[in-house]
Image (tube, rainbow, N blue to C red; front, side, top):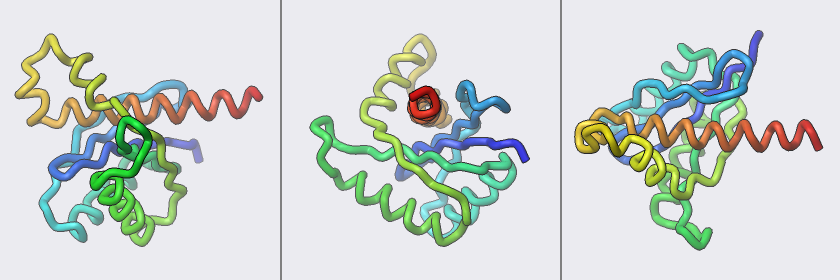
Length: 144
C-alpha cells in the first residue's frame, strides 16, 4: 500500500487538513474540519477523514510559544493527540508549528481574509506548511 501522509492543524474551532501527493513530495490543502465542540465526536469524525484519505502517517502541528515554551494551546493539542491515539492505530508525529497560521494568512492576504478564515482555508494552508516541514525533515534524514 502506498504511503499517504496527512497533516492536521488542530484548533478549537477548526482543524486544518493537508494531504501529501502520492510520492510524498509536497502537501496539498484539503477542506478544514469544523469542530462540533464534542471531543469524542470530533475525534470520530477526524478518524473517518483520515481513513478516507488513506492516511498511513499523521503529522500534527504542535503550537508552542515563540520562545519554544509550552502554551495552553500546546497542552490542548497534546491532549487531543493523546486521545486521537486511542481512536486510531497509526503513527502520529508532531512538528513545531510556530508561525504557520501567520504565514498562511500572509499567503492568502490577497483574498478576503475574513471569509478565508471562516472557511478554514487558512487552517488548511497552515496544515500544508506543517506537512511541508515534515516532508523536508524526512528528506534530510534519508539523505544524511
